Length: 115
Length: 359
View 1 (cartoon, rainbow over the protein chains, first blue to last red):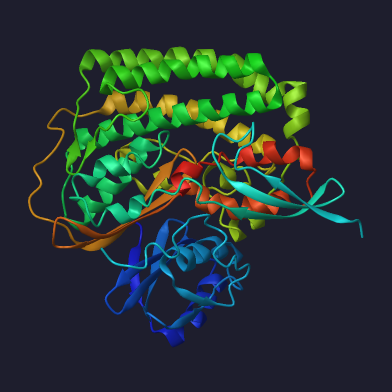
View 2: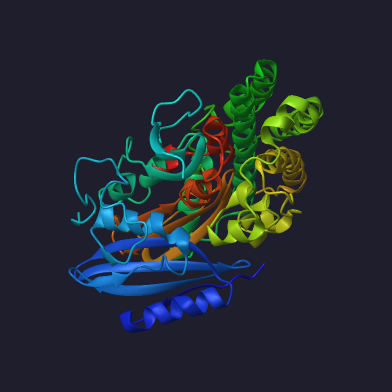
């Protein structure tokens, strides 16, 4: 079976609207991944429909805040809390926000430092 | 409104094989909310990819979890192979498929035993795990390891299976299918099992999609989605179809796993019948540069492996979105409204693997 598996780089101001479009076209949220890069974070939001997968790629500055997508995809809360607690990504309107209580670990944001 | 109280559940609990903690908010005996916390055994394995050679990292990926070990190794290797444009020999793809289907049989029988144990049905637990021993012996005979058997490598597999052993595996699948029948009959038709599972933790089709369920949990709600349909490994040559159930309750999740066992026996026999001759690995030169999202249907559901290479022997990032990560939000939804006494059983029906989630 030939399946689409593409990465679409998107500007931060277009992100929320694009996620709403994905939801309206029945794409389900498959995963959220944070990667530390020199300038901050690379956030990848993967969506699946049938067996196709589209990943929206967002470049976020170290102190830049991004909107949570939990209002659109409620199941995003676990992986967004994970990105916040392990990487220190600043996510606004995250619901529920566990405020660093999801992961019972001693070190705060252990994946924030590279290397 | 009844008085609310909070009951801590886990991380150590007789029914939970692995540590997850839930703060259960109750009104009398009814759960109105569950707040999770994890991280009790977090190992930072994803971070290790920055320190290890990408070929060495296969051994770490395989140790994210015991039950899903082969699939994790395969998912990681296939992701790296996509980045490096490596064409894996067909025989290696078949061998990977045979081993990952053995892992599925192992995982589902393990879960059935744990379920029977949680129900207090000791003889059913022992029968399920007696049968599981046969697949563990097959893993041992073909790889030298019963649980974590490290057969994957970037570019193929490390071990071959002889024609004699393939015939023995095929015969064992026949025997196991015959021996599973009475166990299956008991799980699906025994009054005690039905009374504990039917109608418990119902997840509708719409809820399953909305809350991001995967694997048997998703298919038990009537959604036809099985990543094996994408044709990775040797699945493109085999007859695979998603196994579904309609009711979305705990019984339906049990039914899907039982029927997937029969499917796995058939898939292994089919793969043995079609396995081509040839090499089992190709040499790998250079280092990965680029990124790829690879999906694998693990026993517990869709797992996503992301690798990002920078042209050196160390990867920039490896991310594993495990099936349990996806199944926790729908599980938290299904416990709402259930009785406190049913929570352990309900948590068990998602087949949680916290070890995978705490990678």
